[in-house]
Image 1 (cartoon, one colour):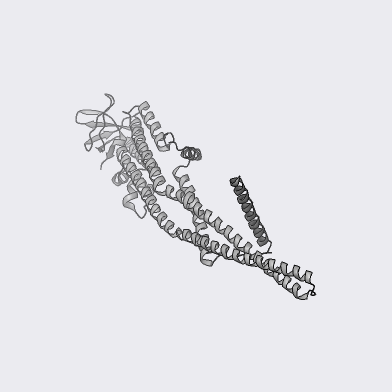
Image 2 (tube, rainbow, N blue to C red):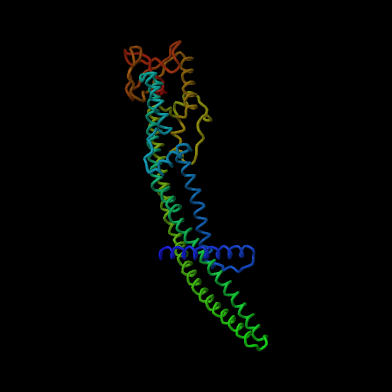
Length: 395
């Protein structure tokens, strides 16, 4: 029974406090009650925290979009994360493209130029897909997780303490309002006491009311001191938490450096993979361009880092195709032969083809009706068809 009485009293006290705060808040909005303002330093800290939370959320969401453009995949990963389960492993886009290329190359025949090139491209795409997975995993651990921990952890704590500070402020202002009303009522009672005729029964009643109001005034004054102390204590707690935002910025800066390093590693890997693929597929140097009277305008325009980008731009399909077509046309029209250096080893698929060894020099020429991707190669007494992508024409 005592426990029940205690719970009822506590419930009634909580309801009274809530009602008092609601009345104070409403009167402040209507301009009928005074409001205790926070100091400028605390207001600046609160503004800084809100700004940090806003931009952290935006950066985090956009980074997720960058790493995983598919919204359905992001939703699936979110659900599995909330269920504390590992999402099923699936091929990403580069890996899927690579697998299609490999399957197509095997279907067309690994011994053919196109099939062999498809297989090499497919293997490179799968390596890029693996690097993409590593980028996502590294970024999630070193960048996204700290940002999410701030939003779901530190900022939630700040929001909770800020709400408590708001409640303590409402309690303080409500107590101040009650004290003000008690002082006004006591002053009126004192004025009434001096203006009443000296009749014993009336004087007794007025004195009783005056004493009652004085007690109420003293109680309100004590309540103001208590609520002021609680408000000051909560303001200090909130201030200490908010000053930790500077440490949060420093931590996020380190995480940002980790994210940039992960991106740098990823793009460097992709560049190296494509550079290796370019060498495997074959390249056409500047001497070949001049031998075939190609205009310099067909080259990719140079930029501030030619040593890095010029070699990559030299083998763009549109440029290479025009070069090869022009070179073959010239060779066919001249009905002559040219010397060519072999770029890579090549195993003949049948007796009509000629096997090649890297860096050897052979004689090549064209015969009527031959496919544009092939030339006739001759080495001593041996001759057969050779793929043009494996050759570099010489002067």
